Amino acid sequence: MAEIRRNRDTRRTVLRYAAAILCTWIAVAQTGAEAERQLEAAIHREIVMGDLNGAIDRYHAILGQSGRSRNVAGTAELHLALCLDRLGRTEEARSAYRRAVSDFSDLPEVAGPARARLAQFEEITPGPRNLNFAQGQPGKVPKGWIVPALPKDLDYMAELRRDGCRSRNGCAVLLVPANAPRPFSHLMQSFSAAPYRGKMVRLRAWVRVEASTPDDRAQMRLVVDREGHRNGFLDNMDDRPVRSAEWTLCDITGKVDMDATFIEIGIMSIGRGRVWVDDVSFDVVK
Image 1 (cartoon, rainbow, N blue to C red):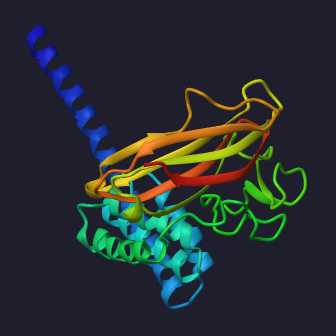
Image 2 (cartoon, rainbow, N blue to C red; image 1 turned 180 degrees about the vertical axis):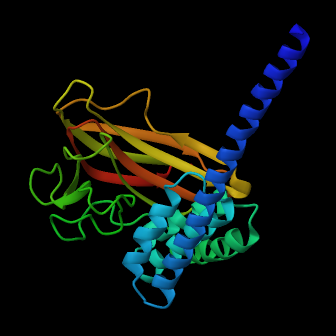
């Protein structure tokens, strides 16, 4: 009799477990179907309606969802890059194309077009731009630099300044406002690694921090991307951040691999303080 009761209890447990799995599968399937409908609507907005900014918002929303398939996510990433490209937001477009190649290499319909466009970028972006912050409109992101894409209702920013700088040309200030969910901002640019392959390069910048808490800091970043989605040189000064209110010279030197594709340089503000950056240089040292 006890054996019969144990068998019944076991069957009930198995049935409850199976029911829970079934409910999970149904929820995932519903989420996936909804993501596909959202993708179709976003592509319609992009291609038929010509509303590129509206489509960008929808692609970002899709990429932020859980439960969407890799095909949906990869297609959204590629179309996000295409929209940014058509709007002339070249640096953001390049970042999106690179994510499409690195994150969805198993999807040739996504990685193929993205890789082809990146090859074109390599031909037209031979090196870093506006390192001395001489170009651009004060109060706006310096020309040639970007703050990576964020939700439009979030007023992260980095802006060009003509006063308070160390040099006479201009400088940039990274701001992290109170409504930011994470105390972080990033000013960056990327360019072709082709002219620098096999060489030692050095990134330098003068940086200072207007701290609001003891944890506020600045970190410079130099990253080398390689073919085949492999990591190259990376230094983000995590072991030597800048916390001083005085102008401080930052220096990163690293080797560019022979199969390097892109180089990324940037300044990060971590915390709620303001980070000032001036006199950026990027040179071959040998």
